[in-house]
Image 1 (cartoon, rainbow, N blue to C red):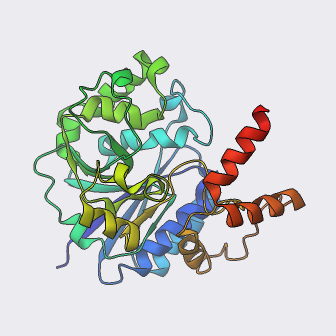
Image 2: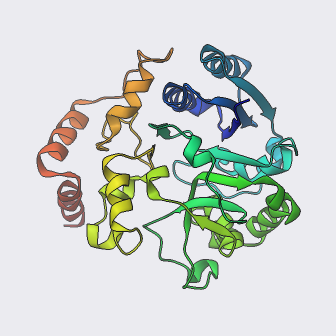
Length: 307
């Protein structure tokens, strides 16, 4: 009997389309695997739940939905493009069936391009989680993390459920959030790193290709990743993660792998998606970004605004 890959994801109503696209990419590239989707939400309509369940059933996989109490997250810090849904992942190991020894958490702003079975079978060496390094982070002092340690991106996590629960991680992280709101910049990701910096296993960046690999210099990236791993993450990633506030469903987004999102969007009920509020000025701006490059365009805008 084939092993079941348990996938957890969390979303609210604003991300139903992107959840559907992520799951479609997952199923399209994992046709030989048994997959059980565990979706967690404190704000998901019955209609949207049915949309997601129909996608899972279309690919003959299994589905469980978990309704969370919104009050659990009322004291959590949010800002910018992030909603309370980012904190849902904290409670997943506490709620999931205890017979499930590990679970793979996936953000919903990602595209799965490869077979996940090798990832699922990775030995995370008795750590509480497996994750991929975050190349942009260098603010260890703010979180009181000793500088010899590393900081991970929390968008893709291989979670050792038993170890997480036995170490009371859910309670510890909520306590940390409550006591350190003034320290948090990257929301629950900061809280997870502050509590797990000694107990996580570093995974190859192909399993979480972050947008920073296209934004930072190669020299800077090689301070974080091995050369072969970096090249694989850039050229042929297993998972594309659209990190940052600009997403592929935004008209002005110029992510090099933006097309991957629309490839799978076109296989869903949202295939007729249209970019909202595309003004003439936005069209001009996008043209200039293409011609000049994003960084050059941003520098020109910055200089213009400050003069």
